[in-house]
Image (cartoon, rainbow, N blue to C red; front, side):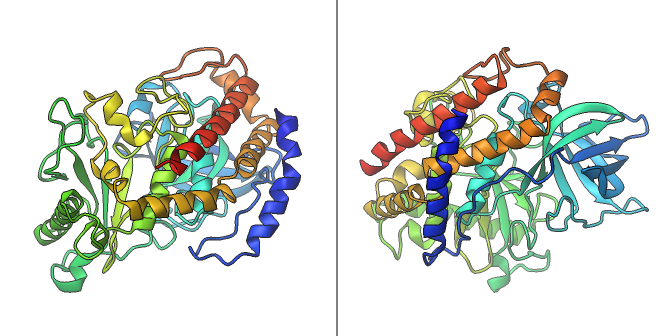
Length: 457
């Protein structure tokens, strides 16, 4: 398989040169060939908690040192905690941390050449035995001009105990270099000021009860999802401003905006460009969000870890994407491992799930104008960033980085899960090469199926 990938290099380089000369009407950067990280050894993240246990919350004080080829890239105080939902059941934990100054006050810093910020994540691929699914989709999203968390492979050691290969990620938040929207202040409660920026999530609720949605933490849609057997509802969690900071006027505005959008989308005039759904949403963002999730058949798509953004004087946008650990054929439930199903039709396969997909996507695909734009964007991406050659070359580059650095060897010596079922694996490879080959074959089959299905919409 690696030989086949290397034979695609010449074709990929031709595609890169050809399309870099084309005018970019979507304000995206030209696609880049993803080369292995420059260092032979992965960046090493060492955390010293002085013997204290890292908890779910609150964050505890610790010291972090990051070295690149044994040269210190960063050294300083942090506050660190365990993060995640279902991933907390795995022995390999993921962490959220804040960089702090000598007085343990939050401070913006640059880590591994990422833009300065204070909030970071150490993502722990565990059920994803390829170790690369999140890195792949995040890089693809940014390649098509949609912000997603920057990501780099690292190896983590805590209190001198090696903990495996991780991804250093940017926490999704409002920031000029992350989700670049207006900062909505608590005294901005009327006029243009009230129109943004807001960040919302369709997700599991925070706290010990993941199903606890209230008027304090969320907005509840009045539209029942398609195929809902148990009267399930869609909830939009407040992220920015959060439930503690958002004012009553701001709650009313963003709730009314969402309800107006859903009402327009469900109406008989939903296709009308003046009074229909397109008056409320940035259609291009919805299309590209759809294509990223369908490309990967993300089993959580549209219903969990789903982010929405409403900036000042702008329409509602989908994204950024988040959490694709169970995508690309890595889930054995609700056809999560299949290459020949639509992710947006999840409710038809699993109508009893508590978290379902909003009615939006099936309705949008009833509009010929939306479908026409979607087809055009798919064809454009398939000849460029979503080509088999460029996607598979990314996979090869990540694999080479993890191989030459001994990251694969070290990780699976620490966590010997190859050949074992880890929830919710759809495929169990006895070796890393088998896991990688499965991912490559899955991607090729998925692209072929989508080519046929999208052309027939």
